Amino acid sequence: MTLSFDQVRAASQRLDGIAVRTPVVANAELDRRLGARVFLKAENLQHIGAFKFRGAYNRLVQLGPESRARGVVAFSSGNHAQGIAYAARLLGMQATIVMPSDAPKVKREGTQAQGATVVAYDRLTESREEIAAEIAARTGATLVPAFDDVDVMAGQGSCGLELIEQMQALGVSPGFLLSPVGGGGLMSGVATAAKALLPECQVVGVEPQDYDDHVQSAAAGERVRITPPGPTACDSLMATMPGELTWEVNSQRVDSFISVTEEQVAHAVSFAF
Image (cartoon, rainbow, N blue to C red; front, side, top):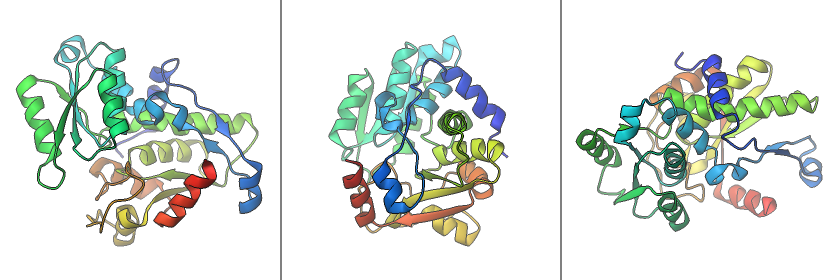
């Protein structure tokens, strides 16, 4: 297995005092509607507004002086971009981010505000992987994938480890732990922490209905590439195939995958607001 609990724990230690220890919150009305006690890990309060900072920092902080001097390059539609940009800024590194030209404006501006250089591409006609690889080859910069990287996966897993510690402090042993799934980085880290500390807990991955590559892959017993009919409101979950490394973990440690409709997403967002 590519990812161990020890790696998640080590990542959590590296992030201690650097990442925000985001709160776990509950809502009486949500509990009433679902007939259950529900706890939400508020990673929207993390640096850059998303968990992606965790994996980015855990990857970059382990680079030596020579690698840091050559900088880092990544490709992302937004959250990984901002996570890499902020982590690089903290570590005194130059970051170059390959972003689709139709990425949300707030994410592009957030990435640039952290001092990163943004290289735009057309997601319909160009390959972000090829562009990023060319930049890395030309400059010597370290290429950091958004999810298919063990150190990134371990860093995201610190969120799951933190959540479980917070639940234990509340005296609660959850029966289900749900995580969103895009490429599977967060899911793999959370599942690794959960199965190590809460082996009886059912770990569930949730993805948009039109981007249900994990649901289909689980049914097929192997990674499946999908062709989505269009975009989704979940613009950070638009992966069309599980990552190779993340799927190795998630196919073994995630109990089930489910999908939700755009209408359900909209309803959840309105309720959260």
